[in-house]
Image 1 (cartoon, helix red, strand yellow):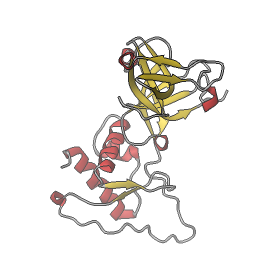
Image 2 (cartoon, rainbow, N blue to C red):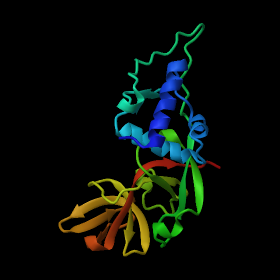
Image 3 (cartoon, rainbow, N blue to C red):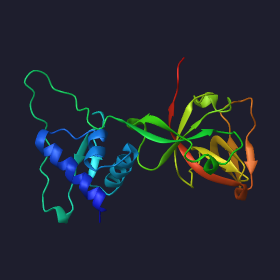
Image 4 (cartoon, rainbow, N blue to C red):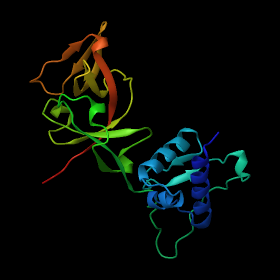
Length: 223
């Protein structure tokens, strides 16, 4: 069962594919659905993908393919075949856009993530993010440098409250300090491992640790 907005977006994507074989850009989808932010389109795309109505074509600049339509739309999708070019094959560039995600401040600044909600927005290439809700944190310090995460980098975080062994997570300690570390279990305890031999692992009672997300990507500025 799709929401009205999800069905409206799916119909728009299908119509554009049928017309020209190219899926619409995030900006075109935003305008068609009369939304204020492209992040809303990103969430709708993720929802449609998770429900099996569309898929993102790998290595084709985030192009979209419609896999099925709900019964209410009374149409059977035909295979999407790009038109033959006259001179050279065009690259599908649709949906190769940026989205805006909340920028919550500097990780390990001693402030809970929620306290920084909605301060600023960061523009991020959509290709760096998968399904789910995301936010960004500016990395402070060198405790994860051996994992390629440097001071001043922007960590792109997928919101989640659970983590698997060995994942890099944002962990809130004692409702006070947020840190970016490898997540491990050591018996009945939680161990947060740095990626820098100069730092010691941090070991906590599980009740002290709240997972607030896992690393999904990284942005770096070069001056």
